[in-house]
Length: 131
Ligand SMILES: [Zn+2]
Image (tube, rainbow, N blue to C red; front, side, top):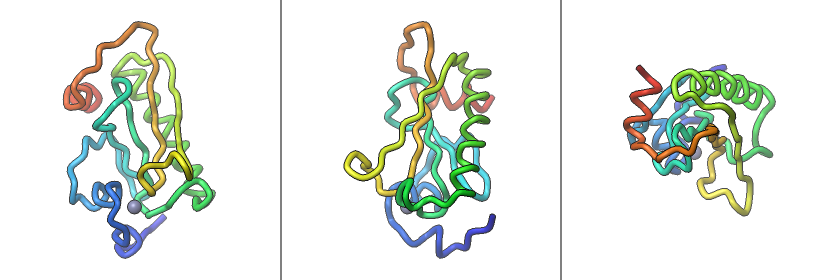
């Protein structure tokens, strides 16, 4: 799937800025369709966001191909979280409308652990995931 520069650059929300490289991010995976990076205000260690590179508002604005791709990548990232962080489960959260803060689709991946975790620095989690 190809997206032109105009489609990627036509909004100024924080995720478009991250996708355009205007704001740095702890990116752990990237392809033509999505950028996957660590949430800088994590609820849990390894709290990750999957964001389409094309500016898509929400689930209602999402085409089937992109949606399928996002869930394929979700499984790939889940595997990484299990291998590198010893996660034992995964919770997905995605807000539309009222509770959606950033008006650019983003899927939260929150790994789960049986042992209580101390929240680590995002930078340290990034190193664990990319080593
Ligand atoms: Zn956007």
